[in-house]
Length: 255
Image (tube, rainbow, N blue to C red; front, side, top):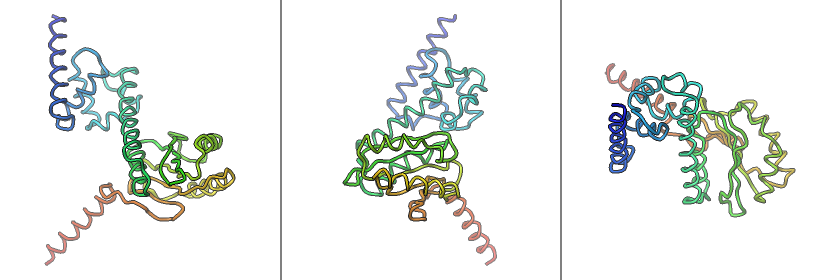
């Protein structure tokens, strides 16, 4: 009986993978998407019940992939290793997207560089600090994550910055970090860190071209002291539109 059930599940996996191949991943139902991902985490067995339990807890696939390993282990059927595998799938995907963007776009204009930075940090759930290296033509030629999971860029290792600049012989860099759950508006700590690091770059002979913050609302430049790019589909924008629509409806009702 156990062997028969294994054959049934194996057939289901094959049909699901063929369906994803024919129809594209985004055309699968949410439960099918989660099942397909779980097939790569669990080599055998029926993953459908686990897919339902994960969706009951997290509601969406992206929330499942972004969930902390400790939290994933609270779901029945998820051990440490399986939670680790599931969490790492997101990292693999992000690495692929960033490498593809860097090779195919070869960002050079400020708009293209903002596109790259948006892809890099907009949807990250933890704070990260990155250095974007620019060559003499202003093209993006290198990128490095200096820290991850910290709440301040003060903790960035100065040696890491020096090694990055000297390794690629960079004439200019862009420093960028994110506010995962907040607006891009700089804090007092951000301004303090900016002044401190700007002096370091001047000493190293590398120009700090900009110091950017990626928030839920857009990309903010500390050096120009203004929002350089607004995310039009951000929660802030949607809330503003909702308020405007509410006011419009009230005006129509009053008329």
